[in-house]
Length: 271
Image 1 (cartoon, rainbow, N blue to C red):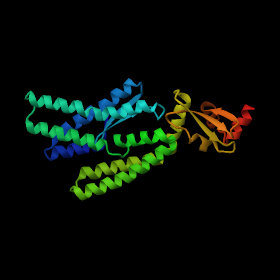
Image 2: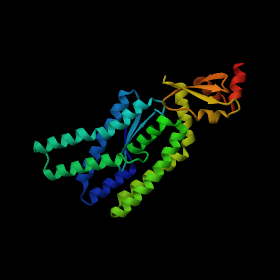
Image 3: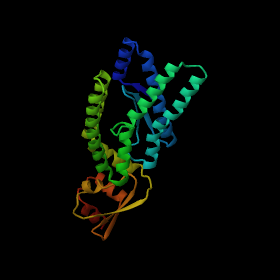
Image 4: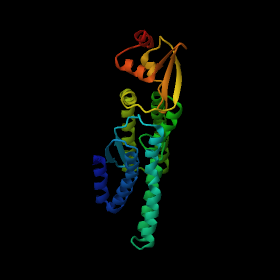
């Protein structure tokens, strides 16, 4: 399913009103190819695609995979979008040398191609660069901590980049709309962090993927919520309770979803 965000319609109407419809159409084409790269990689990995949405500053691929897939798959999906800008540049070069487009049109296409690429690589969620930061953090930190840290980093980088843009560039509507949209997205991600974490746990429980084992030491009096927050994205876990009892990730999540509060309740149940 392909959806166009209302703000995108607004920006398209404004572009047409000021005589920049051709530029807007070129931009939309580049964004479409970028998102096709994400979608093709997601399809290759067997992900369930919900929709592709076109935004004023880019696009967004929405899937039903809630951090339950291996990190290698998500790296492939994230990098596939930026990768598409290379064959795009080659295609524009061929169009120029075959006489299909004029040099000034070619120059515009290349500029827009580079602009979209660099913008998406900014280290701010939900852009591709922000997702890369989240993936890097997820490789070394538990998912819950990595998610929170990535949002904090994104807020900080957004403020810095917006300040620099205001200082260097003249004020214009699209910059304000873009920053406003990203800010709303980050606030929404922060507000829904607990909900997203539960979806992560649900994916781990109902659609487990066998990964490299990670042993985690925990205490019998520790809260289950604190324990499940130690889960990493790229590992399967074995919990060692007081260095005497082992609990698998599946057992831990089973009792967590049953409403148990502490680790010792799992031990008592097993006894």
